[in-house]
Length: 377
Length: 207
Image 1 (cartoon, rainbow over the protein chains, first blue to last red):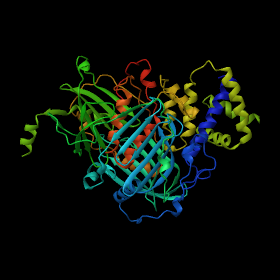
Image 2 (tube, rainbow over the protein chains, first blue to last red; image 1 turned 135 degrees about the horizontal axis):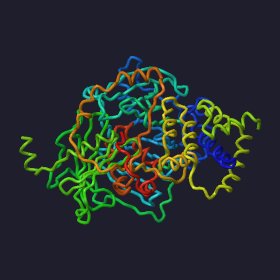
Image 3 (cartoon, chains in turn brown, red; image 1 turned 90 degrees about the vertical axis):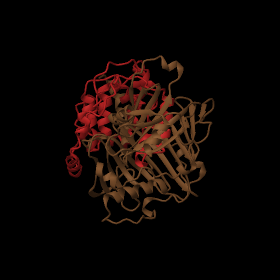
Image 4 (spheres, helix red, strand yellow; image 1 turned 90 degrees about the horizontal axis):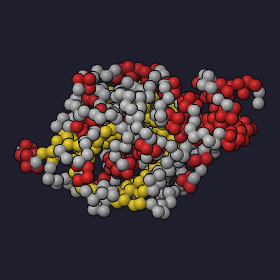
């Protein structure tokens, strides 16, 4: 390596190391609950307009927790905290050797959930949820997706940890430790087979917020990690915190114009002939996706922790002549698989291993509605 | 700058510096304003000199990742950088190192045509996954040895906008932690570029 290359490399390494250190929230730099004075440049965006009345974790109202709580109860508390609390945090997301900083702002006000997730130093993408409206800004595609969901889903806490969950995961508290000056319970959720992923969670003792999350494969190897560099629980978050930074001039807006999903009433009833152990169908609906006029059947399967969505749509005429080649994709550690069955494109997406989405998608079969209803009787 | 520090910096970018020393050096760089400014100037000069070069050295990318992954459980990244260079590694490394603007990474990893098979024996007979081993390793804080799976051929399965639709629609039904992981990965990814790379011959199953 030449000297000039070393200079560049070194500077890049410094840049990343600084971000990484912030991302790993080393105690001397970025204690959780405080705003780091040494924020990386990427963090110094308008996103950093701090919400009024910022409250650090130290002064946040504690949930009713006890050291003797069962590990599964910690998971429930964590889910409740994530879905019902107001919070504003910056975190590092690691996957596949890459680290990126993101910011999440979450608010529950008058029963309406607002959420904003933004990439701080990468694609510039933003995801904003305002009650039933989900908006995804994709500056790299110069596209905005807008999807309307039923209002009743605005507080969805799905799936839920229950007794069945314990049949397919080993949930344990392995230690009680300090992370970024906070007392945390380290809970491991280990899958008992290879159809699902596991987690290691550092759950804050007083707020039940997960300060660090590792997604693990069946051998316990870390494949994805999220670590909060800063996290506050403001009592009030202004509406302005949910405005996107993205300028959408000239962007293509894609909406699902036909409104919220309706119960599935297609001429064919799609169902999975077989499912991985523990998975069951939890929801199904017919909807249109942004930018498409064609109805799509949306089936949801869950084992209580992991979930898989399967989308079924009739192949377009121009696609019908093409050979049906099943293909896989991944978004982080989440998996997608697409295949064609009986002239319909079947796409499964979920935070599960590739084999699981492949298996579920491949098991889908269309039945006449009459046959299904008679079988249910 | 003393010779020892200079030597360490050279070693760092020649992939010859121990991970622990890498971390210490990175920390020093992040704190030492004088050092930071000096190397910033060098970077400008270096960038001008090598402006014709589009991608970073793969080993450098791996080493930077190693610095980032001070977390023992993530030491696996070192294994990744020692693996034979693949088409996406330099690009991924560059993306990480720069902080990052453009690059590849919707991680649209398309596999070779797959024969939809019923649950095979190797899937259904693995209920005895070593959960205990997982837990003991976690409890002991043992370093993991995760190896990044081989990168299969890349081809856009579905248009990325369509995939975005699926991800957004699915996120509503994910667990809170799962949704955050999924959406974070999607926000962090950069669509299109990876899929536009020339297809690579499949190397086998992802696993």
